Length: 92
Ligand SMILES: [Zn+2]
Image (cartoon, rainbow, N blue to C red; front, side):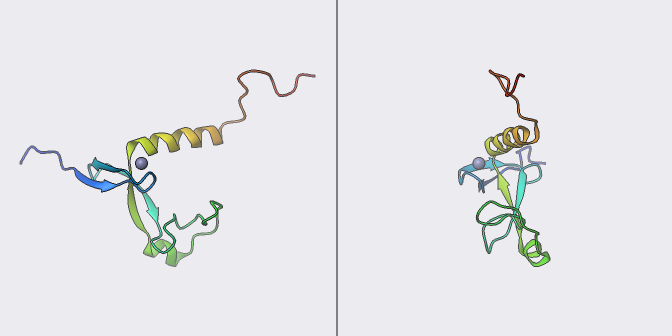
């Protein structure tokens, strides 16, 4: 027992920023080193079926907490029905 937190320093896949993290707890993203993208996403950002080969060669890249937070906010927006703060879209 050293009492020191088991942190390591790495580069965030999303923002390329260096940050410290606990390798056991850090959020990661599967990235295909050949394309530098997740196996199921094309360079254009569109989805495609992930091939078993792409998944097999992919590695888990760490993502910093800020990017996780950002991604959560984006996916929340995408998965929610359109919300209109001001005018309603159509009031007949
Ligand atoms: Zn980041």
